[in-house]
Length: 219
Image 1 (cartoon, rainbow, N blue to C red):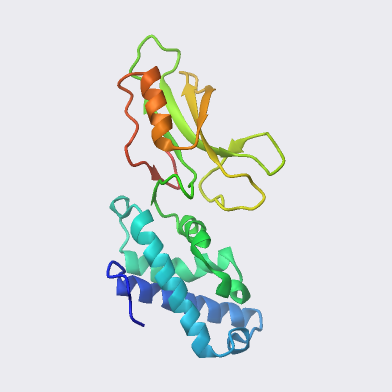
Image 2 (cartoon, rainbow, N blue to C red):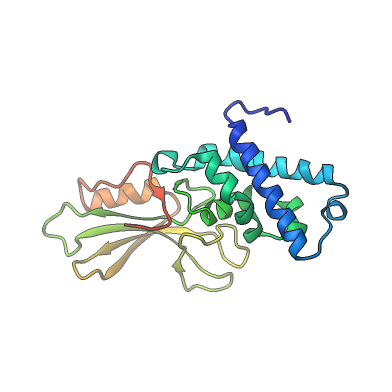
């Protein structure tokens, strides 16, 4: 396979494809499936495995916070990528794997990810309030969303599908947090930069990260 994107790591793509191949073969054996029949030939199955592997690696290059990781990237993928994909969808559905599936698989791999507003990942970040006279000790920016047709918002947490069709698109909520840990909703935003700027007007000197990282375990 020729990689058109020079940024892709061939070792990572190969690791993904091998892991997915092995996981599919194991699932096929357990569920009495014929991979050749499902994909109109084994060669087409391998093409799908390579397509998914390259797609995920391309997505990961701009989304995964590699500086936050201790694992060797290709080794991690070879060990766990295939199983993570099959937690997301069945062997029979793999031909439909697309970019919307990448963040879900990444969260199943417990990867740290660089936050971007679109598509929105489940952000939850806090900053110390530098204003001593404020009732709040911290400020918090968190992704929230509601079920379609509902107006009751809930946090979108790590592991939630950002493209879940049962939910409306998520937004960002700014909260004030007091010493007892109680939160007060302040305002909603579509963009992280706007939430940070508004918090800065309320509390000059507050320091939210310029590029927040979405993690499996928040501090």
